[in-house]
Length: 494
Image 1 (cartoon, helix red, strand yellow):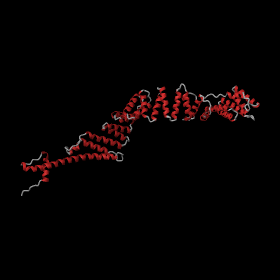
Image 2 (cartoon, one colour; image 1 turned 180 degrees about the vertical axis):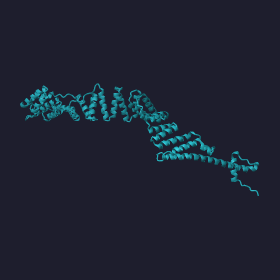
Image 3 (cartoon, helix red, strand yellow; image 1 turned 180 degrees about the horizontal axis):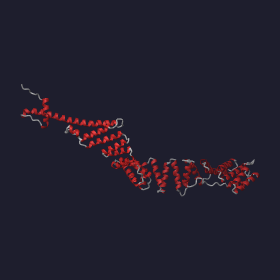
Image 4 (cartoon, helix red, strand yellow; image 1 turned 60 degrees about the vertical axis):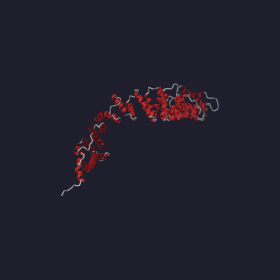
């Protein structure tokens, strides 16, 4: 995230200008020059004191440019003691600050500390001012670290320092350093406002602390239940945390409650229902919202709607949608999808027409002819089967035989180079074997019948001497001549 983006985000979260830091009070620094302590090393000599007093008069009248001219004269004087140098640099820093020259002010204050003429508490106080100026001048990390060091050395933890450190560490995008100060800022806020919650949510999110973020968002939802963005964030966190089912329940609740209105949000609901194997419900929502105009009735949405109905095996509903989408777009894939839907409805002729259109527009001929052939073959399952009572001519003229031949023709149209080519050949072989197996079965049945009759005829001849005549069963009469030629010895009279 850019520095500008961070600044804009933080301004929103904390509800204040990023540069609205605690005002730096430099009055005590100036007063030290007029009321120099009468102790060794902490007083001005006559020469330096005269120039500094002139500078002080300019400062008191707000003429800081003139004051800086005098202070530059004073700092150039020879044999200044440490106290004089530290005080002059402090006054220079104060004037630079008043002229918004933060870089020069910082340098002057650092020189004041380095000159060695300040008491420890004075130096600490000045370091706080430097830290504030660094932060105000865009050196967020450097200023924040200096202020933090001051507090770690026992400096008073003022509320404005806590807020300043929170802002500065966030500005430097060091969210882990910002978090403990933000937590203090949050805990001490009374009453807590939206900006306090927003900042904690922002930090937890950027630090990947999903559990903590979930807690803060739940608390925000309790306070601002009408804010849909919070519910969206909650659903997103659930989904990202592997709790998709709960995320779905939240999204479904928002939809049923009328909180979702944008196409993006509504499509999310459709996708959730589809993901959880509820394609029919997903299709109903998509269909309803398209009719209401809240989801665009584009060709891709029509395709999605038809796909959902097909997944739900509602082919009757999918077909008119696909017909509309195919005719409006002219896409080969849509004609193929239409052919498949018609195939699943058993409308072979319409399915074949759609597939032929898809082939003409460049769709996979192998896949298309495979489904055309399969649909033709499946029609045979609804037709009367061949039986052994039928003559060969009757078998050849039977509807089931013609349907099988039509299926074979379609399977033969599958290009050999197609991925379906091998399967098509297997189907042709299978269908041919079907007819051959019927012929073999009929031949077998006929052989069994003949063998049985041969036994009955043999028995009839054996009983003829006892009953005085040959009695052959009526159903076996057709086989007597063949039996006699094979098994009876013909007596030749001489």
